[in-house]
Amino acid sequence: MGDLGLLVALFLFCGLGIVLIYWGVKRGNSHMSQIRKAVESRGDVFELLPGSYSKGLEIHIRASDGAWNLTIHQGQPSGPSKSRPSWSEWSTPYAAVSSGAAMWAPKSEVGFGTKFGAINGPVQSFVSNALRRGLTRALDLPHQKMDVIPTPGRAGILLATSDAKQALDNVLDHPQLLALRQGRRLSRQPSVVRDVNGLRIRLQTPLNTAQDVLDVIDLGLTLSQTLDPHQT
Image 1 (cartoon, rainbow, N blue to C red):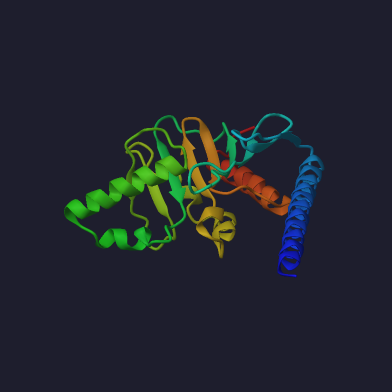
Image 2 (cartoon, rainbow, N blue to C red):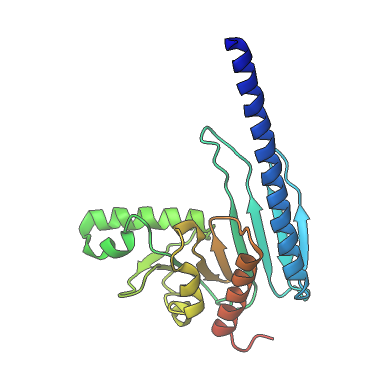
């Protein structure tokens, strides 16, 4: 009876695993179908690039006139931790600066944004360099010397080159951006990057619902228009 019970338990466990996998695939396909329907109803273009073991799945959404693009990358498990490098990025060539780069990121969960001002001397330099390297890697920023710019009273971290310190001033407190950061974990809060290539809205997680996708698209369009009112 002991062996029989073990076999029954193993059978039930395998069956449950199959059901969960099926449910997960079905749920994912449903979300993807909803995203496709939502963006195509607005006249935008949806393209799915299936993943493989070495390359993650990607969804490409773009304006019909090519004015902007949104890439949603779902990475595959890799390395000992089986982590998945996933991200989402909206981009447009509009609102570019003539030189330099600036980035407005959500405040770090470990409190660098509030504690940085109280750190002095060599420790301040170390923290500044570590913070800058971490954020530039996470947001795929160009290899330029970027400094932490003080933003008293604001919930975020501003990095910029010396010639682009004011490049994002008009959107630091934008209500649409603040709304998409409010109450969300750090990876789901959008960061804003402005450089010579244009404007980018980046999240360190894939967008999983149609509403999330539309919110990021609308945020990108609004911030782009705010920074470059004369774009066509």
